[in-house]
Image (cartoon, rainbow, N blue to C red):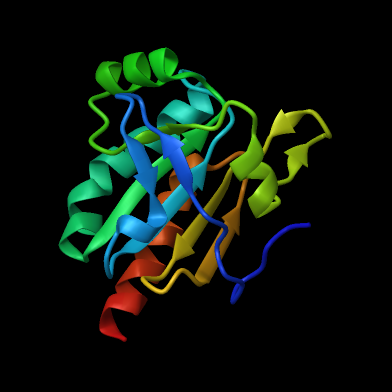
Length: 152
């Protein structure tokens, strides 16, 4: 079942492209922008990841952390991150357990969906954006919500 705004985010504990275990409960008062994407090195996913890269300093200045998630392995993530100089972790959700726990829908019943969650420092989902075709829109939406939360 898909999570909704106001729900508590599931536990996150996945390794990134460098083998570092990333846990949401270790972020200490930071907002987490968690974006699920279908696959490394595909055109839409590259556009989305590069848009997050290009706006990363704004998220950092607002005290937010950005993590990408797909089912690709660490080797694929490492190549993708290096090729595009991505400054944020890419988490490997090989069994799609995290994707399932968030209820990220599949597109046409086949493709992993593209959904971004903004999770506040207490672990509550404050925004969900689901748009398969416009990866960069995920960045604009996330940045807008993070700015609102930073004023709060």
